[in-house]
Structures are given as C-alpha cells and as structure tokens.
Length: 138
Image (tube, rainbow, N blue to C red; front, side, top):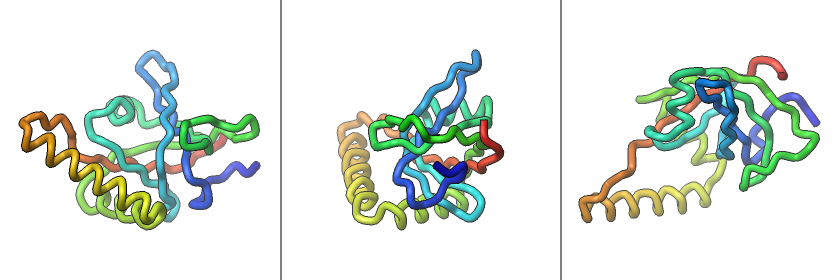
C-alpha cells in the first residue's frame, strides 16, 4: 500500500490527540486540494478543539465506520482550521468529490438545523473546515 493519499480513497481516519497524548480517531470525508486535504465538520466538536491545542494529526485510509485495514500506513500530518474563503473552497472540494451523497447530507443538515431553530433548540454550530498537509510517515 502507498504512503500517500489521493482523492481515490473515500474515507480517512483522522486521528487527533488529547492533551495527555492519547489518540482519538474519527472517520471523515476528505478532498485533495493541491498539496493539502480538506475536511468539513461542526465547529464545537472534539477534533476541532484538539487541533486548536495540537495541530499534529495522523491519517489512515479507512472504511465508512472507521475500520482501518492492517496494511494501511499511518501518515503524519499537520492540521489547521480555516474560515472564510478557504472554508468555502474546502466545502466545494468535498461537495465535488462526494457529489449526490454530499448534496443529500447538506439538505438533511439544513433541514434539521432550520427545524431546531424554529423549535428554539438550535444546538448546531457552524461548519468548520480543516486543512491538513502530510509531513512524513510515522
């Protein structure tokens, strides 16, 4: 298996690290964007908080549930949180890669957010974009 990542893979396990150094894997959609890869997520979630504290992450190709195959290499990367035009670029790249599935997810997300707001129970935080750049293998 290759020690690189491309848009051919569907999911990666994005591993962020707690303050005590323990790893927290999360399966995510991602899109190649030049020499970086983009991920979208909610703002107030653990992986965003952990990246704010420590930009070091690792990634491994996985399936939709996060299961990593035995031969999947661990790839080291540095992550950064982005907003504004960069976040829009990430969202568009992920949307282009995942096509109709992303559109369906976006519609679902919009409807549930609007419904929660109408009921006064909006707990959704805005979307955040993460860009990560591969460094060297672990």
